[in-house]
Length: 103
Image (cartoon, rainbow, N blue to C red):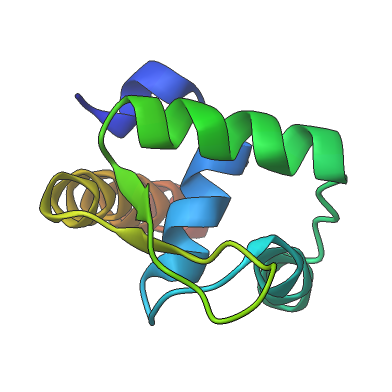
């Protein structure tokens, strides 16, 4: 599965995977991290819907918890998909900035 199946760069799936890139987090932790990283506030419905889709597609997995919070982590497939998508976005940004400099 490729992240491009989930849509454009501000898609909740990409934001969630990017948040999990530095380690497991539970839902609220992801919401706070994503907002501080991007300024985008994901509501609980958006967040948990995207988490369910990502888990179903094998890009993330829930891990055991000591409390009622349910943390998630990237799977190997999730790491690979995120790396590929971020590389594509980096190339797009670089090309776009070069073109703007010439405009």
